[in-house]
Image (cartoon, rainbow, N blue to C red; front, side, top):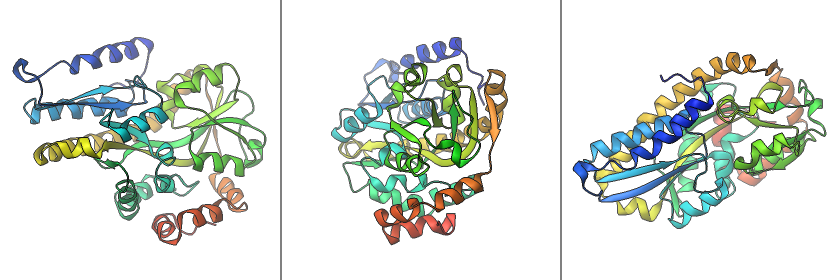
Length: 338
């Protein structure tokens, strides 16, 4: 795996390298299909590194017939902007967190239910099994579809520039940025936190200017976007697992011949497996590297947080919204959520 220690130099090198892939074509000829893949993550994030590898293999396997150019770091707009663009086809593919996709396809946030998964074995059993199949079928009822298995965003952890979050009570009144995602907003409101939905491309400045005290994201995001510069502590709550779906505009997908569609999904699935392994390793190594950058890590009792959440109406409310069939897919892996 590529060295995951991040620096401004590596960030700039990664950013500069990406456009070069977009100008290579088969023996100097124009590609038959030229598509875009947009992403909100930094070029050095494993999701973009592995996506670019997949796009290179796709170009090679199709003999240059299909050229997919990667546009990372919200170059083409905010996450909410890009979701609209992939729906209308101005962007053909878009890598989006399940939690934000839920603003368009509510079922997408089923796997984001608070404290539903205890570990990765439970996550992949659900997402490569019945729960993932159910979510993909719900997405496919819209103008978009999923074109690969789900990628890993990781378990989300809480960081803060002010108070240290050690118990559920510490969240009361805590001003925390959340993505514009109903599930995460609902979760933190259940803990009486001041949840503020803010787009990802505004996250760093919101923390820097103290609009919010903290945020919650997987460690890879905290590292690649240098949030350690504006945060002091990280509480390992693992309150939500989040994934990435690579979404395709249906019309653009159907324009591709079947053999090209098969290659695209095959190579993206291959990179999804590699990216999952990357994030699992980073979840361990980044604790050490972020601590060296000044972040204080706090191990919390996750069972205490889940029990506190269970004393609210959170689970009952979401079960009502999703319905018994959807909820049963979740509880097949998570166990009874009360």
